[in-house]
Length: 196
Image 1: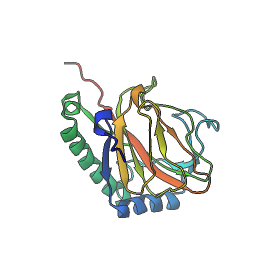
Image 2: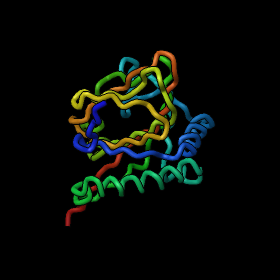
Image 3: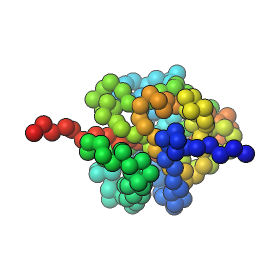
Image 4: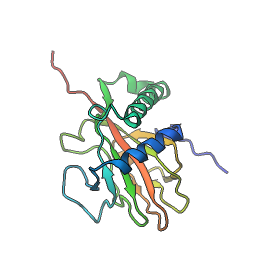
């Protein structure tokens, strides 16, 4: 079996404690704020993205142990990402975005449209990287396909992936016909530039 060189293609991968995955799923299940998945701030786009989601805030929801524990983990992962790819640490100030999504895809649901995380609107044009944490195992398809790199990440509980937000890392979700897929996903973005 040939090893795929993720680092060469600017992917960063870590394992996250399964307890954090379970706590995030529990946060989702107990949230009264579930919505159908949206693309950006637009209306529902059923041809592109079909899921149920909640949109926690690392600041607003810090009192929940699931959110605070995950933020600490994600922050540590970003520091190790910089050790792996030192140049990213030399770029203008960036940080993990406050808001993120916990998404649940029922069998047959997915974010089917090929897309990248960097866009033209104010929210996405400062994004430098995307991250995704698989919260459960999916054994019947259900991964994430990156066409330019010709790989599909398997949905394995505790797998945290980070990659550049730009068009070079366009991707799409692969639906599982029989299983539910749960992920947490978000971004890191540049701070507002301060002219001196």
